[in-house]
Image 1 (cartoon, helix red, strand yellow):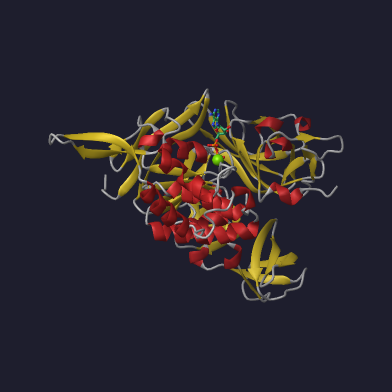
Image 2 (cartoon, rainbow, N blue to C red):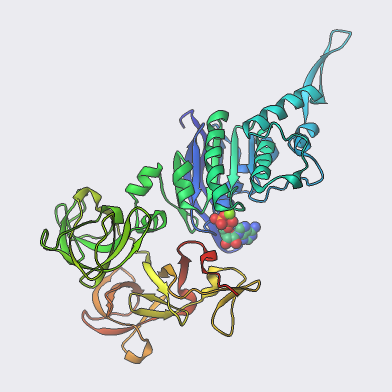
Length: 504
Ligand SMILES: Nc1ncnc2c1ncn2[C@@H]1O[C@H](COP(=O)(O)OP(=O)(O)O)[C@@H](O)[C@H]1O
Ligand SMILES: [Mg+2]
């Protein structure tokens, strides 16, 4: 262990009943760092944080603090404080008393010299003057020094959040944990508080461990980002590394707008996608199937005869400074960004610089589709492959009403055309030679014997690839139905569900 590692997670896992929620995480956090755990809701961020604070015991593995095993140390003995989204302030106490609350209860060992010369240690409350100084310092850091006497309910959401932070830092912890602390604030306030938290981190000089599902927030604030999915760490890196060099398609999709394609290494530093062979800078094995990601800002659109790869502009949206274009290239779509105002239906040449083609190892353990959307019949569509799915998974506690809208607490959501990412386990797909067994059909491209099962690659009529583990052997070029049960389709909405609220 290096001596600047304040926290080390050593192969920690956590199960609740039969569900494995955190799956073998190992990482370290450096002293003074601002680290963010980022991932979709339910991926195990809070559970991980609770194991660091001691409120949850790992099922397996160890938590080290400054190199010492603290796995069994109760929370109050760890130099760690947590700020939650729900501030849990005392409404009947003023700002000062809320911040001073813990300090007033606290007892510290004081050595007293008796008349006979013997020394005894007694537990004593902190002197009022010391409490005053500590509270004043904490309130200064959160910029609330003039509001000591105000009652909590006269404060704005942002101010209340600051009181909660002051209360957490008044004990001078070595580590501050922040679990989606800005989730309850509106967008403008959230942006302001992001910058302020960053300032506080600088002023305090302590370690911040932050949790959010908001990728922009993570990119703005962090020294290091830990991207999680389903209890597993996907990538650890600086914001720039995570953005520019995502290690897999999930990270690329989750972190920003991107074009993600299945591709093949056709030669040394040559990769084929969009029916075109591109120069690239990454070395992978020749013939290896890979995923590639290209950010829209890295797609260069030029006059129609500049390169031989031609696309047609299908649509455009003005974004204030630039336009976002959807370009049709063969059967695929390409998202591009350009400040020029180009005409819909016009032809463009397409260029991408080799260093802007990020190549990633293909993940064969899951079928992931990042450009899917919800149809008006509440199905999910990958290009033209439509499957029945369960929309209520996008909003826990919701239902589908008689008109087909998602509803919860009287609010209706219209998800038609909503972009989603889809995951289907490779064991969850069935194939049939009965053509009427599904509306989605494909052709067997490849079948590899893996020792005790076949791994089959099927390409659908809309050119989506599905990987399937099966006991059955299929012949190349067989036409099959692709069958997926409703409950085996896992959806993740891109963006916030509140966007889809329907006006009453
Ligand atoms: N005490 C618990 N008992 C059972 N399941 C739990 C418990 N705490 C969390 N979970 C489950 O663990 C999963 C991950 O939860 P959580 O760590 O809160 O995710 P995140 O903070 O990333 O949204 C969720 O499916 C949640 O329902
Ligand atoms: Mg959480």
